[in-house]
Amino acid sequence: MLTIDSVSKSLGEFTLSNVSLSIGDGEYFIVLGPTGAGKTILLETIAGIYSPDAGRILLNGRDITDVPARDRNIGMVYQDYMLFPHLTVEENIGFGLKSRRADPVFIRGKVEESAELLNISHLLHRYPGTLSGGEQQRAAIARALVMEPEALLLDEPLSALDVKTRESLRVELARIHEATGMTIVHITHNFEEVFDLADRVAIMRGGEVVQVGTPEEIFRRPNSDFVAGFVGVENLFRGMGSSTGTVAVGNLRIQVENAISGPVSVAIRPEDILLSKTALPENEKNVFLGRIDSVRPNGGLVRVFVNTGIPFQVTLTRQGFEEAGIAPGDAVYLAFRPSSAHVYPSGAPEEA
Image (cartoon, rainbow, N blue to C red; front, side, top):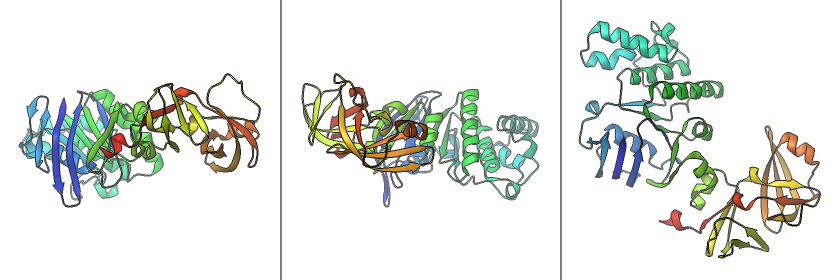
């Protein structure tokens, strides 16, 4: 539905470098990456605010690379709403249709329809300055949707909102996507938005796309040390892999499912590790004896740091931690499945 084909763009210190993505019709696609990765430039290039230095952009098979932004039929919503303060909510939502010189009766009907979808019909007479952040963002989304775009671009739409409002609007976005079937490309730093909304995810770094996949693939099977670290894989080790499905890391031999020979990285999510004060069956794979170095409560979770010769971080629920009856200094058995130890060649995708 939306194809970004080898697009490059340089804007001072921000760049896009040969970015290629294919986004399906009706897909909710999220782009993640650190500040300066090029996420907003990508969105604004798709929208037509910038022309690429190289490459093409296609929308439903139509080459829109050189089409002016106003003629692309793509909606865009920024994190700071960008509503006109001197216009009512109704006038803000209908502004684009009025600019197209649409019939006033038609505009009124479309505005009411869009406002109802966003649950802001009762705010149409109000001015932006009298609205909460969440209400302003709903109005901004309604303003984009009223134009019936072929794709909707969201630039960190929830980042300026408080936690409760963010949670509420995440639910709203999921409902809107289901109701409209619209193709949405959404930039965020928030992992909860990824799991609540995304069909697929792209990770960007330094103007390049370094991995694309489902949330499950990105978070559980990263393809580089950068992606593993970015998505919170605290247990990341360099080692030497063998064709027999083991990886030598320090004094440990870790059993893995995807055997790779040579220098590799092993990524193990902290919530996939089991701790026990009692011995585990000898036939279990990846069972190592260690000692608890420290324990750090973190809200409803507890982070446990275990030294087995190499340092592991384990995440337990508070209840699980209390039931385990463990404390700093205790000897414990640490265990995880081979399927939880994801292996990839050291540095390969990251340095590409």
